Every structure is written in C-alpha cells, then in structure tokens.
Image 1 (cartoon, helix red, strand yellow):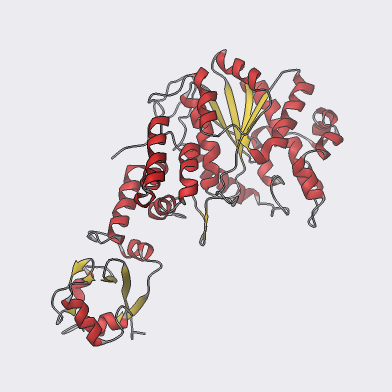
Image 2: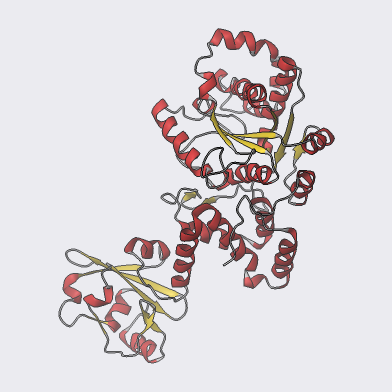
Amino acid sequence: MTQSPELNDASPSTDDLLNELRWRGLLHQITDEEGLGKLLSSGPQTIYIGFDPTATSLHVGSMMQLMMLRRFQRAGHRPIALVGGATGMIGDPSGKSEERNLLSAEQLQLNVDGVAAQMRRFLQFEGEDGFEGKNGALLLNNFDWMQGYSYLEFLRDVGKNFPVGTMMGKESVRSRLNSEAGLSYTEFSYMLLQAYDFVHLSREHGCRIQAGGSDQWGNITAGIDLGRRMTGQQLFGLTAPLLTTSDGKKMGKTENGAVWLDPERTSPYAFYQYWVNVADDDVMRCIAYLTEIEKDEYDELAERTEQSAGERAAQKRLAQWMTTLVHGEEGIESAQRATQILFGGELGNTTDDQLREIFADVPSCDISQDQIDGDGLWIVEALQLAGLCSSGGEARRSVKENSIYLNNCRVTDEQKRVVGSDFDGRSVIVLRRGKRKYALLKLVAGAAN
C-alpha cells in the first residue's frame, strides 16, 4: 500500500516552495510576492495560521490550512498553529451571514483541547516525539496573551493604530453591515484581536508571515497594517482558495453534516467514502490542494481520469492518502476492509455498529429470537421480509440462479434456514441479491416488526 509521506521525507526546498504552491493552485492572494520570495530565500522563516475552536474537532475545510503549515514545515520553516481561545469567544464575522453563538469558557476549553490534539497528526511539534529539528511547530493559544489585557490598555495600544475607515473598507465588514443581520460591536472588534495576534507573534516569535483562506484576506492585511504602525516591520500575507466544488459549494459537507477529522464523529470508513465519491470535476483539485502527491503522479492520475473516469483511480488514491494521514494505517485498513464488504468481501470480525454504518442506506427488517430458534427462518421468507424478493417463487428462482448471498456467502440451497449461528455473535445479518442489492436482518428483543 502506498502511504502518505512523513514530514522527514524528501520535501521541496525553500526556493521551490512558492513554485509548488503555485502549481497546486494554492496562491490566491499575496501581499508582496517578490518580497515574500526574497524573505523565504533568506533562510528559515516562521509562518502562522489561526484556527477558531468552534467545535471539539476540526473538519475537512480546516485541512487546507493544516496542509499549508505542513508544506512550510517540510520546506524547513517553522509553523505556528494558533488556536483562538480568545478570538473564539467572539467569532469571526468573515464569510458569515449572522453572528455566532458565544461559547462558554468550559466549552471553549474542550474545543481547544480537541483541536490541538488533532493538529499533531499533521505537524511535528517542538520537543514532541523526539523531534529535534529547528523548525519544530508551535501550538499557541491567543487567550494566553489576551486574558490579562485590559480594555483600556487595548484601546490605547492597539485601537489608536486602527483607522475606522480601513476597517469599514474590509469586505467582511461591509457585507455584514449591509445584511439583514447587521454586525455587532463585538464582531466588529474581531479584526483588531486577530491583527494584534500577528503583531504579538512577530515580536515574540519572529513570525513575519500569516496565511489563511481567501475569506481571511481582510483580517490578514489588517494585521500587516497594524504591524507596520506598531513596530515598523514589514509583514507578509498569503491566502489559499476556499475548498469548494466546481459549482462553488463548500466541500466537506454531507447529508449528515460536516466531515470531521474526529473518528468518533466521522468514522474512517465514512471519511474514506467521502473522498472515493468526489466528483470527477473536483478530484484533481482536491489532490492538488490537500495531498503531497508529486506532480508526476498528479499528471498521471489526471490523464487516467480523463481517459477512464470509470476507474475512479484518482478518487481511490485521494481517499487512500487522506485517510492514511488523518486516521493512520489502522484507519485506512478498516476503511478499505469495510469497502470490500460493501462489494461482497468477507465480514470477518466486523461489528454490528460497523455493519450498520456500511449499510446505513439499505433497507432493513427486524426479526425476533423466536424466528431463528429451532428450525430457524426459511431463506425464502427472509428474502421476502427484507424486501429483496416480492414472492416466494421469485426468492426460490434467485437462489437457483446463484444470486442470493447471506453475509456475502452464496446461498445454494433453497431450503436454507437462517439460524442463530448465522449471526456469528452479531445482531445483524447481511442479505444480498445480485451484485449490489442489499438488505439487513436485525435481531431485536421481543416480537418482530
């Protein structure tokens, strides 16, 4: 199996980093491309990206920024993952049509802890896991330097350097002011807090680069302007495109909600399936944006997608790479095993919960213990109860045609009875007719439905 590369694998040099970002389509806006190029060529630099802890888990949309930090670290630079413990109490109005609900201090801390733990799958942090590189990532929380900052001090030090006209000119502010929801003073102040983060990080950690999604352009340029006014130092900013489908919709959402990085919220199997099912029009952009697959392999996958889209070679490679990175070898093996079961593979030691998830969209029927005791439930009746056959005659013909499977094992005897041993310690049985027509029999207490 091809694995996702580790951070100590071959990586682009500092000089080649911008070229790599460019071919991947990750350079949406840069404040000073020539100046940034010279800065990166002068030696290792520090770059930061902020993450608002609005939930206990990051989601797929956050991967754009995590991978940006990872790319810089692989090129020898030091990334700072800034968790917004302070700014998260307010909420960024950028790209939002209405004000967010404010989080309690307790919930915010739970979110910060959850998000911080997930970042360790993407970055190698200073002093952790034996990492001794000079470019070890830092995990910081802006609550640490904002909690003791009084309102009056903040107005004196920061507010006086922030022209209101500049703030009013930012798209994130204008769009909300003109909306029905309006913009509260609390949200209006968000830009000052994020801008001050950049100034603080430049002073304390020598950070001169901030990156983010394209919706952060106004906040990033505000920080650059504040840095010039407060320190006289030139700071730099760059943004990447937002992760969207070809028709402009945000990626990372399903009928069940967001695609989370937490396996308790989105299982490795569901995560894998999300990427396997990415549309042909979107898959190559996802590979460029979210993986470290090299250009030669990228071009090969693009050609295969164009010539033989039905193979879904690019989608399978994307799903394998992403799932390995986020959920590790155990996660990708579990996801691929579940996928094989969906296509007729052996059930093995698959649990009830896993089977229910794999076959979440297929019909099901409840049966009672009484029905499988003694002689058991006749397979012909089971097929009718599950809705796979409309009559006993159709069920018997299907068995004779070798198109009926119980737990993905072919049923060849039309007198077969479903008994307790067929459940093999589970409470779910998988019935299949043909290649892809599935149904579940669920063993329940009491009388069957």
